Figure 1 (cartoon, rainbow, N blue to C red):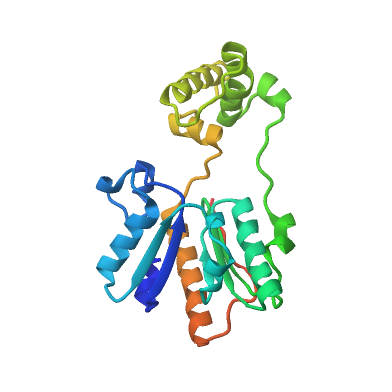
Figure 2: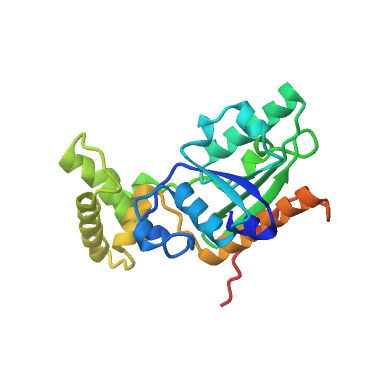
Length: 258
């Protein structure tokens, strides 16, 4: 959003259903310590309008699904930085429906990151492939065989899964693990650490324990910045016709040297 404002876009609407957490501060530069607990959309809008007074930013603290067709029809295009497949499928279906029902073409610029990996693309209803066309390209969620977890752990993640999937139900019966409960995570960390020591496995940390339990994929600030820049570049091209828009994926992959 800040990039779009600095590029000269004067009327931006932003939707986000999250509030600011301390863990956001190392990579989301619109937020400060004093903002923890406040809605991300509102804080980001305030920051951007203060820095770029000529830009009007209208925030909405809620879900993209809360808005109807008339809302999305009011925009020239939509830029997405969503963090789930269901949300991407919903907004994709929405722009396709706008084309089919109202003959309105609303380009969708989509970007996402996963650790050091990232991608951006442009979806034009009736002109390009849509999100549904590429679902089979998604990386399946990592799952560890129960036999490995129970009998031959080799990774710190195996020990954490053993603690959460096998040991927790034995001790706490029907009580569900809360990934945000510090006592729950501490118990899992202690149990997984003991298991790791038994098998001489290193790498079990408190943050990894919470990450495995909540299926957290680490966010890398540099990757986020590259993908944000790519999405804004595509938005600028759509708005000005200064150059052809991206007709394929823009991918960022980690460079590993040994």
